[in-house]
Length: 240
Ligand code: PEP
Image (cartoon, rainbow, N blue to C red):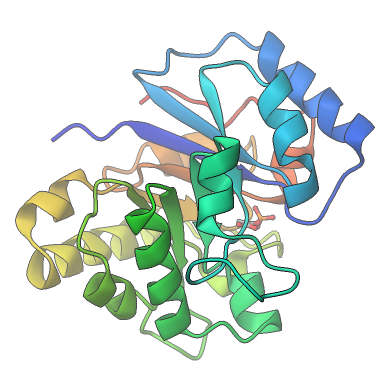
């Protein structure tokens, strides 16, 4: 089954309105393959979501970087999936390793968040990935709680590769992605295994993205640091 290449840019907690506008201008002026071939999603900090959505070309989409685990209410500082729907924000990143490590988000909590966001109609980039000490990448609680996989992209992000400049080799990435697909086959079903996009994240840049993209089970990228660089931002939007 053909899986549409997916490129996500995670801008994390960076940027001013002016800087964000510059990146959007670069993206808007780019000649890229059509939306039928490559899906492009950028994820600015919450405060810039509406600005980016209003300026960004219509074939590119916007993702929040997190949302609350259930319906909104007395949860100061949080943003609910319902609010994202209300603002027309179609995607959310959930379970990024920085939130797992710095804010103690557990695999179970992440699994609940993914399931709730999907239930509200928000598409999810669900991050999984092991530290050097762990082998279990954290996909089990997600698989236990998600019943509709159509709107989930799995981002495999080995923690040792995020923001470190140490990118997984194409063979390492392919090995894990292939294992994850097998895991989906054995623990969910063969259809989900064949259709779910598994994207790689961890020090992807303009110089290493083509080789990674050539791997049969690498269906795209989640790019952090390099997605903020005007010089690199277009290089990930590669055709298969
Ligand atoms: C990320 O934050 O998801 C990420 C992969 O970061 P970087 O590309 O900077 O390693």
